Length: 145
Length: 110
Length: 116
Image (cartoon, rainbow over all chains, first blue to last red; front, side, top):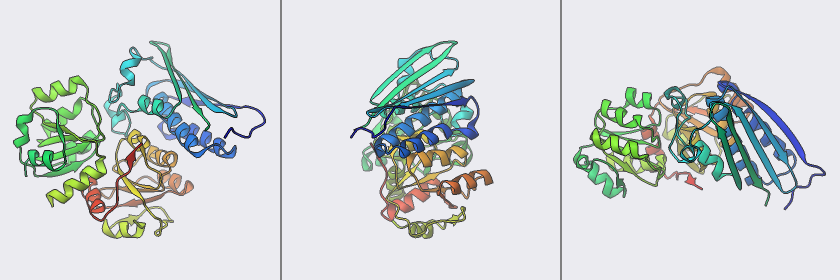
């Protein structure tokens, strides 16, 4: 069922690197927004999970990042751009269990090498582009049923 | 009870250092936090985790653990398999979750 | 399994001011890695964890988890407790380790959450 909205909804959040205490706020707000517009619960859940993982990646690896979303009647698109170190080999980074997170991050419950696979698993379309020394951009689309 | 008995009872897949399947198990410890395992596990415990980082091999060695059970059917990187083989650490794997693996072990060991 | 049974089996103490003891817990998930909690299908699960960080509450909120059980008598900081209360998430603590807590609940018939 397509979403009953008159026009597309757009929004964005800033994510600051290293700020673990604020981790999850953007995903939490996006989740609320999707509830407000009456989106399908499974899509809300998938979008929230994928966004949270993306947010954590910015917090763990980058100086800062920007998360933008676009809600249309038929899908939600989420785009995360960061000013981080970039990923040399994105195929390798997509492998389950591969992680370059430092040990202290693993002690905080992250860096299991599940983040990128988890984002992909929860998206209908998933794209990652990265330039070493510049940053990483992830685009995800979840279709409404 | 030996690791071998667990492999049979829980249908585990032995991944590395199969000679170690003869190791006796003293107990079990379930955790994904390496420092926690270093600090709180006991010698001879079998360690249940979904952590697949290379450092699990060193942790199991330092803590004198009987072996490692990787849950959730998670794949191990080649480097981890090689290091475990070289350092004589027995790694087994199961598609079951950590909760269920712990539950089944508990029934066997207590 | 009703939460009050879990509390009894695990000698658990309640941390948040309000805990719905009649809540029906359908499955359990034992994990310290938050992506694992997000990876498995965990709504209405009990999360058993040794990690007492603010992201545990965020993860629970996003995964639809309403109850978190900390092992080894861990008690999170005040700001984490308030965050949980704000999101109606109940926090509990047990003296047992993750292995024993999981073992006792599995033995009592609580099923595991499933990968999806």
